[in-house]
Amino acid sequence: MTVMTKPQETTLTGRLPKVRGRYRENARLAGVTWFRVGGPAEVVFRPADVEDLSYFLHHKPADVPVMVIGVGSNLLVRDGGVPGVVVRLGRAFADIAIEGRNIDCGAACLDLNVAATAKNMGLAGLEFLCGVPGTIGGALRMNAGAYGRETKDILIEAKALDPLGQIHVLKGGELGMSYRKSALPCDWIFVQARLRGEPGDPEVIARRMTEIQAARGGSQPVRSRTGGSTFKNPPGHKAWELIDKAGCRGLRRGAAMVSEQHCNFLINTGGATAADLEFLGEEVRSRVFQASGIRLEWEIRRIGLPSVPRDWGGAL
Ligand SMILES: Cc1cc2nc3c(=O)[nH]c(=O)nc-3n(C[C@H](O)[C@H](O)[C@H](O)COP(=O)(O)OP(=O)(O)OC[C@H]3O[C@@H](n4cnc5c(N)ncnc54)[C@H](O)[C@@H]3O)c2cc1C
Image (cartoon, rainbow, N blue to C red; front, side, top):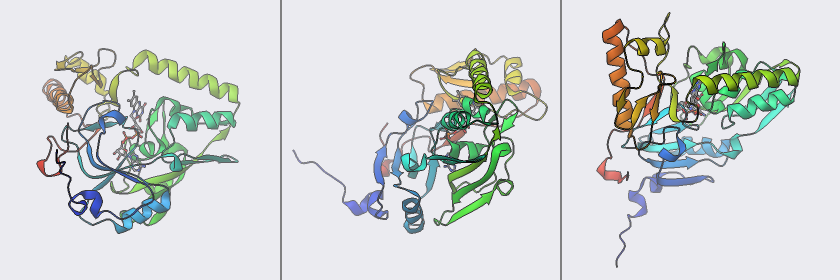
């Protein structure tokens, strides 16, 4: 049998710079997001370190789109997958170092690990991070927050690469962080953060973290295939209350469902497509608008194409 392979220069990786890290073509993303849905990335790039990432950004062809993802706890990857290069930061971006009250952590660190390390070193104020199941990069981009605190409250400065691979160190105030967003252009990539803690008793901090985790377990479907809060709270309102009043609790489309436990969470009950989840989200928005006149804004980031483009052969 003759096996047909594409010549290297016609594949995207054939056009990308030689790096020390790893490229993977047609790489499955569903397995790395919380919803467990969506098509593949045309290429996933795992840089060896910051210099490798910078080299890649500086030398890649200008027409190739690049985006970065964390652990996909706030992402809906559409069924057609993501064209271009999806950057995933690995172990080289997951160091945590503490000096005095400062906590330097790579963008790939899990928020929970940063909270736990700070606790072990007797630094308080980061407890809220133990309930956010993302990375520090995602927390910076989304200004992740819970229980009255947000990432911007603990941020001293962040290191980010611009689309040409230049490294910038930005003070917290320069990032324009507000409710679940940062004003940093969406094609910049965070690689590190310097966070600030306050001296505290590790036992008291540990108790607070346990309380936070217990409260979340009781009120949110944290063991489900979900993307966290689907919509932002509109000023003066709670998204879940509006959704509930519009009669959407438990609403379904295929295997996609509005959580019964917390109706601002969408759930993949098994076998849902990204289209099912997105359609259900839009149905909720429309019903909430009819019932209250308020337009909910998606908090979950939706990326990629609705269906598979033929020319790069992404398979579902
Ligand atoms: C069960 C559950 C509970 C949740 N609870 C909360 C909560 O209490 N509070 C809260 O704020 N959020 C919550 N979330 C949402 C989510 O955990 C946060 O938004 C988190 O910060 C996303 O991080 P991530 O690494 O998963 O990012 P991803 O979901 O992978 O990406 C989210 C966005 O961040 C960008 N991004 C990721 N890494 C980088 C980087 N290095 N540089 C630049 N941009 C980057 C991506 O491009 C994308 O736009 C919850 C989610 C779930 C599933």
